[in-house]
Length: 380
Image (cartoon, rainbow, N blue to C red; front, side, top):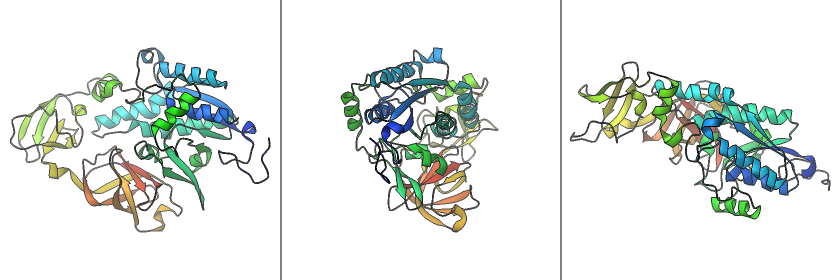
C-alpha cells in the first residue's frame, strides 16, 4: 500500500516499505539478525550483507567473536529463515590495511588502540556503506545500540535507551553524511532481553547465541600474541623503571603493558602499589609510579569528527561531557579548539589512565546527544 503524501515509513523515508531497499550489515549475531528479521517482517526489501574480515579457515573453529566463519553461516541461516537474499563480501585485504596493521603499529608505539572504532569508520561505514549505495539501497541498517534522531538541522546521534548496551563510544567517528544514510533500529530498546525476545518470536536460529566478547581477530583477548605474529621481534625485553629512576626489574616486551596497569608487572615485594604510568618504546622501558601520577586533566585530541550544529571553531570553548574510556561514565570537560580537527580537552576532574590511542568522545552534558569525538594522541 503506498504511503499518503508527506507520510514517512518506520525508517523515516517517504516510501512504502516494499519500495524501500535496506542493506542490513549482518555479523551473524542476535542483534543484527533481529534488525534484518524485523525489517523483513515489516515488508522492506531487505538485503543482508556479511563481511569476511579475516582468514575464513582459521575462523571456522573460533567462537565468541564477530565476523568469523561460523557467524557467516549463522547470518545465512537467518536470511534463509526470513526469506531475503544474503551476500558475503571478502574484505580481508581492506580490513588488514585499514584496521589490523594500524592496530599492530599503534601497540608497538606504546598506544592502546581501539580497532572496533576504526573498523566502523573505515570498513563498515565507508566501504560497506558505498556497497549498499551500489546496490541501490535507500539506507543501511545495523544492530548497533545507538539512536539516530531528527533535530532542527538534520540527523543527530544519541545514546541508546539502554545505557548498559550503549555503543556511542565506538561510533563517535560516524560522519554527518554517513548518519544521514544509516539507521539503528535497536537503539530505542531498553534491554537485551527485548532483543532476544524478538529473535525468539521470529524463530531465528541465533536467538540464544551468546554475545561476542573479543575483538574479532584477537582470540581470548591476548593482544600481545597477535602483535608478535604480525610484527616478529616486537617483544624485545627491557627494563622496568620507577619514575624516580630506580631500576626495578625486567620485562619481556612493552607490548605486554598498558597505561594504568597494576597487576602482572613482575616486580613484587615492594612496599608501595605501583602502576604503569608511561611506555618508553624507543628505549624499551616500562615506567611505573604511584597512582597519583596517572591523574590527567589535559587531553590532546586530533582527527576530530564534530557533529555539533555549529562548526567546532565557531567558539573558543565548548562545555561538554567526555568519555576517555568506553567503560567510564561521561565527565564534565571543556573543549578548546585548535583547528577543525584538533583540540585540547580539559577535564574538570582529573581522570586516571588516559592513554594515547584511546578515543575521547563528546556528549551533551544535559542530554543524550553525541557531538562526535577524536583520538587521544599523546600524554602530558
